[in-house]
Length: 609
Image 1 (cartoon, rainbow, N blue to C red):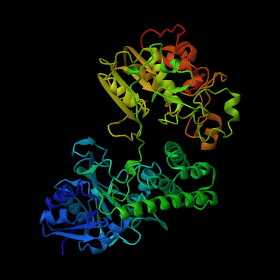
Image 2: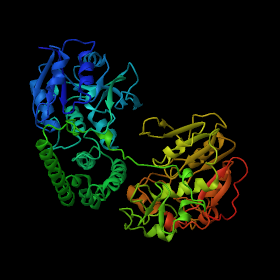
Image 3: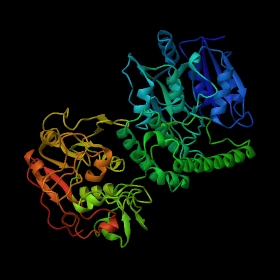
Image 4: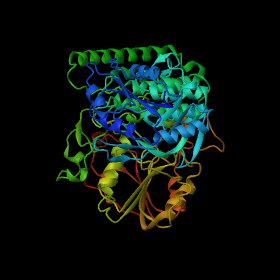
């Protein structure tokens, strides 16, 4: 009987040997290594046998379902502590020892986890996600924190099961991967973290001691039969946690925005999401205790789950019929980290029409982000919501009618921003320039990086992407005159004191540095409209345009820039972009270009387009 059981639920042959060797090479040696082969024809047996380690035990399960494979392994484990390792991941040699020592010293903890890096097929590190604690440190994580930070923000900051170890005294093996009464299809790892934290706190341990592999063959790929469950199971948990009193109205509003973005991104590939899109407004309109049992939502969820179940059954039958063909599916319990959309992009500077912008060269609608013709722009799901006040004050911002490109799924603000930047000359030569990009648009960021600026700094107050920094625009931690270009779009309507942010931008700009900072505003309001106290999401939606906005800027907005020592103006669409049709480009012709400089004000003659 060993102290630690390392469980490897396996389905694919490609990386299994590397996973086994990393388990075999642990500095903590009192271990057993259990491999559950979930292929229908025991295709992995020869690989396991070739390792030649008496601590390895092989079992052929053949369920072709990751959670069943994992549960069967847990029942066979003899160790007091159980360590996961999926068949395409790798453990650093100290992983088991560090987690075992941490759990031994904190017996009240149910599960311990350390940091991990993300690698590719060749074991090369592609990204380094943030750690919860620094190297050498530890911290207890309560369930309330998981509800707020993981479920409320739809952010699996713990990561994949391969960087976790749990104490079996705190585990109910039968319901470990369930959420409430639901058997999950995708987010079993998130459910496991919630379930274990019900019994005891989790323990965060500093250090990057495992590697999570991303590759085209894993079942978290968008082509997986149950991929859409990785979207709507987030909503299931959001509603459940809200009904239990664990999420605030602000957290629900944030979750609603995130879910809308995910559903819109994938609704064409997965039509079962349309019913959930239709009911998503409930998150901010129903009482929390009604959210989890709402008849409209439950019906939409049942329909989506039935579609996924049928798709999975068809896929499983096909695999069983081809038992001798290596399967692209993984037995991996699905993880949240694979949800990020994969958006193609092309550098517009390499395919400009000789007559001007790609839009001007196209007689019909054309997306300047993916550079493809568009039959019709998709409206925002909330386009028909009541916006009477915003119409009365002639609010200017995003267009909800021509919102989304059906090809690359970029939105109207992405397209308008890219047009404004390319036509105002700010992208002409970035090789010697430093750029600060606040809350970077995911379709714009890779295009700017491809232009090879001298330095590109991306970040947000709550960064969610690898490589992004934590940045507070009201207190920038950069030297005076450091940046040549600052891009900060649709942020000022969220910050507590925009005058502080503008003053910081002005301070950090070089003598001729430039600032681009689009934001909603009303030219019909003489003064900026905001209250001297927090408002409800309903009030903010009605009077500020969105539930997390804290103001609606008025016609005095230009004075706020100039008071910060910036020169420039709100330049109209036709002044910057000439004859480029806003309808063809899918943007709002009333939205001006917020373009300012630390030096002389930019000057535009009416562009020929």
